[in-house]
Length: 475
Image (cartoon, rainbow, N blue to C red; front, side):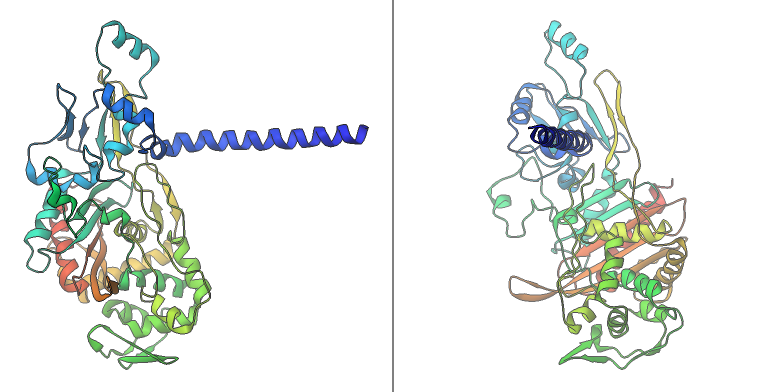
């Protein structure tokens, strides 16, 4: 009998302990990531609140009102068409066609659920409709409009889908999160809803695509972590490397001859990076990729991002070799690849992307201020410093020369990623990079679907972004 009581007590303590852990974790999750649950379409409280509360304003980092609510309770967006279209994926739209925009993701503030009891009672006594809080985001709506204009009017990008992201690599502030094609949230007709280009899809955060040669940043880091002669080893590129029964070639079938890691990075030699991947091995290359955020569950406070993937199954040497060049089922979002470039710029420290700048009540009470958070340390400062040199070399002397801006030192990496879309082969153009000047601590990612050459198509878009930042965004 005593043994049974003892067992019962032990079991009771275990159950109570587990419930306590669950409660603490639940409280932490609600505090940190409750916006995901609150803004869910299944949340009836959210749907009813939208009908009963005057939603707060959304303003950009410069105080420009991007979204507000009129006297009839209708959600309205700013009068400037260019900016209104450019930030549509950032904000979302009144009908909820765009998932996880600020309008829904920060609904707990915008609908006043952070309002104190005394404020609610006071509004009730006065017979006033409850007003939500105003949210200032870190984005620059004029920068977003400039990016859309660059895409839509560019000789090589006009009519193509794509995405661009701009982050402060020191703080994680997101200045731009743009997805093409855009649409006018005030004119969502049937043609927009049935558009085969899927304008509601946020390609910056939701499209996981092969990053192509931009992934060579990670492969190069892995070589430094795992090869004692990584910086001095001389590779041979004859234009083709046979791996098993497969031939690996460079873009345009170039032959680079003898080259070191730095030169291979500068000219983006697939043959060299295939050799590096095979030398380092799949497990160690995957470990490096994971230190940069691949295969992680992204649960960011301010933005919903699809997870990036580096394959975890046993693979043959052909697949491993192509992984070194960012192919073979290696996929990432434009936002994540911006974070990768930002981590190199920030001496190996990757910041969590932050979009929430400040939250104010209608009576100017500050509910929330901007806070920055380190997401992870991706590599050592010493390795990051070497990669900074390599990425500057790419823009100064290599495939990224089209991103050069007079008066700025730009560092970057191009990518031309082969992919299959609807059964057809295509090549996505990529560029990731940053301004190597702490007065302009900004990292950029550009992806152009079906654009072809990263150096010829994505890098010129990045150049326009860097020019805007130089002229308008000095810290």
